[in-house]
Image 1 (cartoon, rainbow, N blue to C red):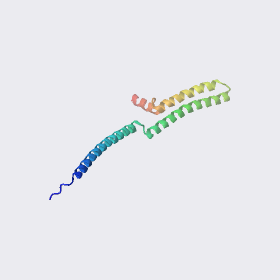
Image 2: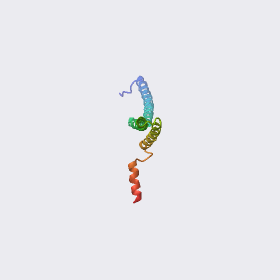
Image 3: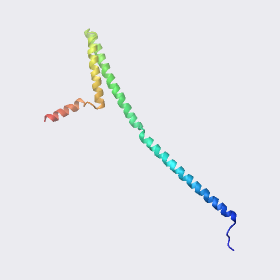
Image 4: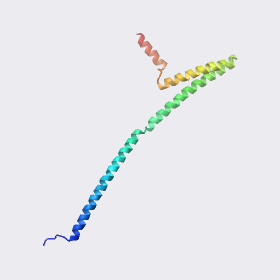
Length: 130
């Protein structure tokens, strides 16, 4: 005698096949959602600047502020000293404050790279003369 099984076994097998098909469909949908989410996360990570870039920007910003403020303060301090020493109040302060401002702007331009440092200009002028 062959064992063909009971009619209830066929229904159970059919239900299990349907459940497995539904599970596979849900698994594919979940896989697609996860792939999409990981691609979006990678794109967002690429769009955000790294901490190293932020640190370099902050370092340059503090250097620029320091160069400018130091030029102005040194000019003002020297002007005040000359006024006290020579008795030319307020002219020494005004003139040297303006010179300090110009020196500060020049230092900022050098720090940013818009103007070559004096050493580089001397080297390039020597090579042009030859």
